[in-house]
Amino acid sequence: MGNKPRLTKGKAIAIILVILMLVTLTALTARERLRLTFLEKAVITVIAPMQNLVSRTAGRVTSVVDTFRHYRELEEENRSLKEELSRLEILHPQLKELRQENYRLRELLQFKAKTDYQLLPAEVIARNPNQWFEILTVDKGSTHGVKQGMPVVTSPGLVGSIYTVAPYSSQVMLLTDPRRGVSALVQRSRDPGIVGTVEGLGGNEGHLIMRNLPPEANIQLGDTIISSGLGPLFPKGLVLGYVLEVGDDEYGLLRYALLEPAANFNRLEELFIVIEWFEEEEEEGEEEEEPTLEEEGEG
Amino acid sequence: MVVVLFFLFCAGILVLQGSLFPLLWPPFYQPDPLLVLVISLSIILGERRGSLLGLGAGLLQDILFGPALGLFALSKAAVAYLAGFSSREIYKDQIVGPLILTFILTVIHEFILFFLINMFFYVSATWEAFSSPLLLKTLGNVAFLFIIYPLVYNAGRKGTVFPRDIRL
Image (tube, rainbow over all chains, first blue to last red; front, side, top):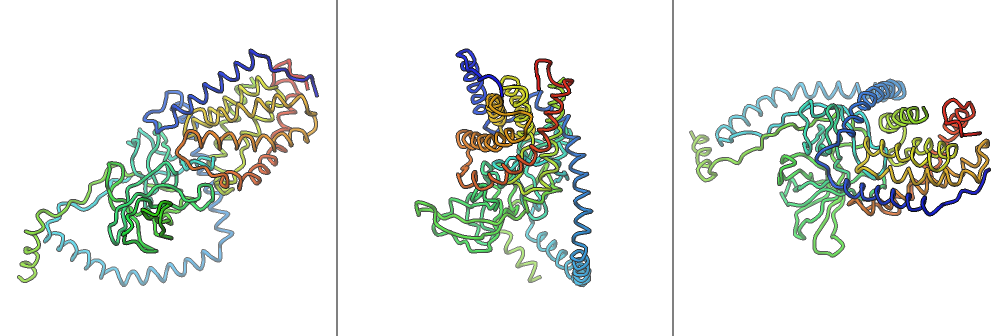
């Protein structure tokens, strides 16, 4: 133990000034930033390879340990997958036939283009250790063509979008981050709404909530919610989640739906960054085309 | 010397926290060894040097993971200052004092973050979300103290790492 520390007037003023400076810096940078400073880019660029190395090594070790721990489960899964594969092999010719039929019908309806994405695969190399913000770091950056705001997906659905970009890595703000909002609709009934905030922040559940649904909204448990394509950030038709619960908002004027996210946000390892997408265009002149189909069908 | 080593250590700890810890702990209960390092160093080096190192460590965390610059810098610098300020009231050669300080300062650190997040971000950080993982998180930090504090204390005793005016 030592002497009692004394807080002099000069010291107190210095402390207050530093606190004010840091609070101002936080306030100024709290909004979504378009660019990182040189220092930030330099630090991220130096540390990203280390993150990549640790993440890959840890991933491999975990994978080996998991293989030993779940050997019986894996054996069982292997057997069921083989069965599934043989079932799908039977279905394959049928699917091929349906695909050709779909193609013919599309031709008849004169669709200009299908929805198509140009994807860039990326690996997760770090995750924000703080509980309040859902941000991941991936191993692709501006040198790979990544830009701020690009959507990020996995096979089950939308994951989030690019938040900041460094030369060799980028940060992804997940859909479960309450600052992220996506315009969405119910796939079955096409009711518009907004998806975005996490339900029970910090409660480990990571649910999404669909807000601003009109009272007459046709929405049921289990419905699939997809991105509406309104706004420039996200293409139409990406699966966001499935309805778990429907209720009225606090004023009773609008409805909300609690969603189970399509993607598993706790086990994200490989992602795809949507570099470019081509939206599906509506058929030209509906009234003119319907008779064409009938005519063709009759012919 | 101490500054260079400190930033290398911080970078290493942050890499582990971001890339390894998510595989070992659920996202809400992850301990914060960087905070433990900052507290340990502040106990040894005092409030002025400690808070400067806390500021540096926090800024590094802000750059790598933070949603804004200054959030972790402020919380870690404040906690480091308090650790250094209180360190004259404890026996540095015994772990009990640093242990109690780590327990209290982890709670204060989380509270500062909770306050700043509610103030500057569109995040509805609820009290329940703040308080429910706190105990496990704090215990995790205390566990890390048993590894980090002896390393820092012994480095201080050898007298090669810290400035000459540091006497342990």
